[in-house]
Image (cartoon, rainbow, N blue to C red; front, side, top):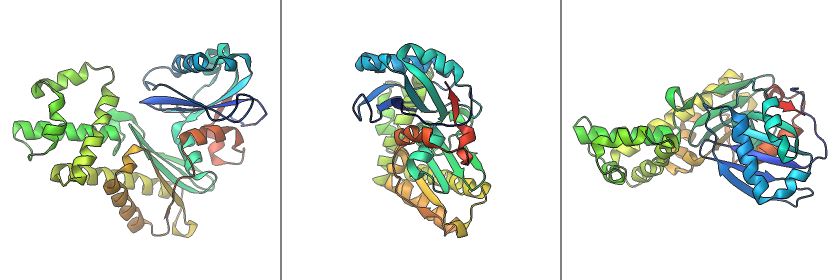
Length: 317
């Protein structure tokens, strides 16, 4: 195992492993270019190796040619530790023709996909949320601590607060909200909703999916939903600015800011985040992402040893 990142001419599969789904893309090479296979998401509380083997089995079923190659698999994954050992992953993937694994947390691949080698910060808010800032000499991770003790402003956070608002409206603790209809109607007995949710093995992604109903209700004028979205934006902006400060980036650096993920598609949330960041650090530049997590995974083999990110990319071959 090594932290040094090298590159060669072997075929590359880029992997973006999130909690809701995992996507695998073949990079230009002997298999053509651009096909994508979508598989199951990762469960961050469980070991990653066998989960990636399941993903690769799906890929091999769709594209059996990969099993006859010595390919590189470059993975950005939710739940990957900063000191993750990629050897177990390599052993699990060897039956599928994999000779080298590059493994990083998906915050690293989100950053590379969005900003490339620019100094700045990326906040990616999907089912979960994480902020990664890269300065000249250091990297700072903010939040991304999972739905139980973190992920403030994520789709799960929005969905969970939407459900909370429904229950508060139901028992008299909170204001009436249209969410009582749009979310509450999903349950035959609203007072048994918590039992239904706790029994669902896909509870996290199910609750995260309610975020779309919260943002839609906010755009349509529901006061309760609007307040939830504004609070989510504040959390995300706070994490973003914190990352910049932790890496000692200032207005003078004109740091790039990438805002990624499904939550950022809400115009209300995106606009509120932009206002807060601009007020806290006027020199920061909100930029359009260069690409996405899959692009960042594909870029893992190109990260040089002089990059602060190199110590967060783990290699087994």
